[in-house]
Length: 322
Ligand code: COA
Image (cartoon, rainbow, N blue to C red):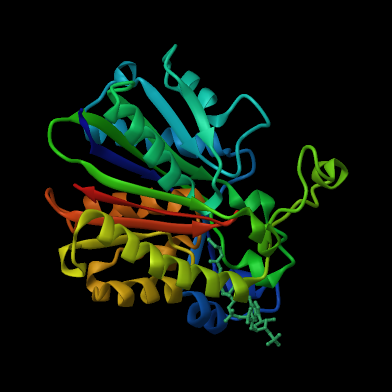
């Protein structure tokens, strides 16, 4: 059986930057509060008319170029998103058409902030079983479209963006293990409580926005990610010191620091983008990975631990040899 190896990454962030100072003019908040409680300084916001697929396409083309791959070589497309362009077709199908290719399977994965880890795990299984040889995986979000911009407890936290990677069959590892979990009993703590089928009137009138009990989500995230780290190390027979880089979902610097502490990793070994991107949900891990590869921090042979926690609740991790 082949391994699945990351052969290229790409990223795209919308041009418009919203700073904490901008938010101070919109809601009753302060730069100090946002920085101290979350670590966020600024986030990117998609322009009017700029869609999740636009962001996904830009990141995907960047990843294909890095991998030296032509679109026609792709035989699987998975887009992780909670903010798809449309009800249907899936954003993955729209992306496939943009890339000018035909026939390969293309579908979206919806696991909110854990979406990218879910997509990576699914693509890895396709490659390991021989069902695909060259997968394009994208995490892309326009979270700004489902925020209540008058709710200071949520609107300061999120941002828009897309990250992508090419995963190819290889005789050398590769993705070493993936770990996926969910527990739907906590849906009330983090949700957009309306949609196509439930409260469609609220969905149609634009009242379907992110609602979160931040404090409870925070506690759950820290505890769950701590257990996740132990699960990954145990499954691979590794020690904490075997991990070179933590590439976490970027929700809150305090959650990231707690996971790093659990791993005994100094913050110099943790890729942090939450300060400049905010929480971009499914896009945050591939955006962070791309940043650390392009600036030379992550080198071939490095062992990477990616982990995420999000709405659902969903949580998961991937251990990857780069
Ligand atoms: N500016 C200023 N004050 C704010 C504020 C803002 N943007 N948002 C909330 N507050 C206030 C609250 O109203 C509360 O005031 P009160 O004590 O008078 O009631 C106070 O700040 C503390 O709120 P609390 O929610 O307890 O703060 P916190 O330390 O838990 O931090 C979050 C809030 C949202 C930053 C934090 O809970 C968090 O990051 N949660 C997890 C988020 C997350 O990961 N979500 C997605 C999962 S992927």
